[in-house]
Image (cartoon, rainbow, N blue to C red; front, side, top):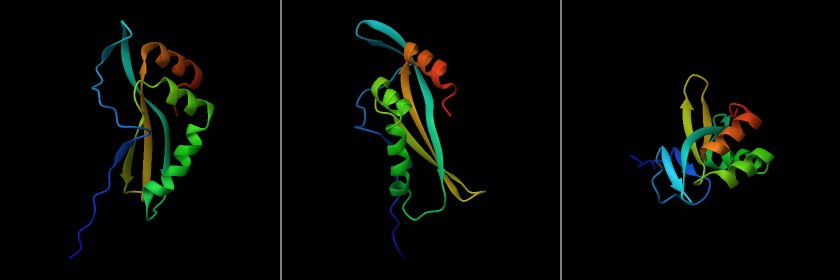
Length: 115
């Protein structure tokens, strides 16, 4: 019997944050409401090493105007999540970011619902 390594189903696009995020946070003596937003999502087919194949679409997204803005304005490193879709045998990746209320408003006005 072989022992299978359990692969993570989520991670960070940068260093793992060491602080807890609250619904309202005080940053530089100003209180901000924090919003978690889905900023990008994509699917991959049935591949052997999912994280390696997911690296290219994540990197390409980070090089777009939207990706650069999110990486700069997020209050902590954006995180990615992987979900299995058993009906189509695909892997769905979702990237989320936590934004201050004013950055959230700008994001919604410029890019809509993030998809």
